[in-house]
Length: 61
Image 1 (cartoon, one colour):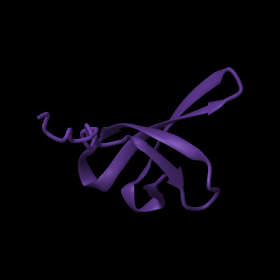
Image 2 (cartoon, rainbow, N blue to C red):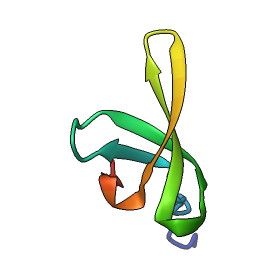
Image 3 (cartoon, rainbow, N blue to C red):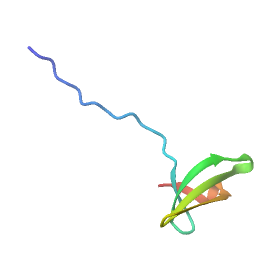
């Protein structure tokens, strides 16, 4: 009498969470810059710092 229900699937979202290859520290990509660089932010306790690194220096988390 009633049809089978399909399980709802969550949409695949792009994440901005990455890790630095050298240290393994988790970072957030804030923006992509020209020349293959990215601006990242990292949390250290309650202090947020940002830096510019090469896109080759990060890997998806």
